[in-house]
Length: 120
Image (cartoon, rainbow, N blue to C red; front, side):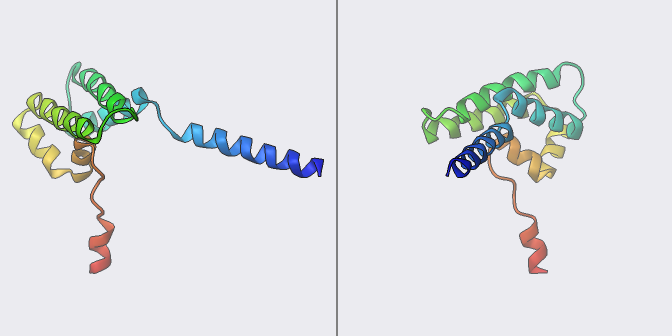
């Protein structure tokens, strides 16, 4: 009986620690998004650092359970407007042409491209 309890305890301990490692912090999520955007849009200078700061604020709001859905939607809208305001027309065209990147900026799920492939 003691062995079963010990095994179950270890199992749950590893399960909990495994789930904790899967979640990225707000800053890590922001850095990943800013890096992807920088690579896709060829951002120059300190622009990537500016987007990291913007995305950190975005993820702080989005991951706060106390924030209402309306507030989260408004934050996504504001972030998209700020991103678009800081890009050149060519970069905006690249952003619009990349559904996955655009979904990250908007805070929405990326479109399912596999559904199109299944239809064909």
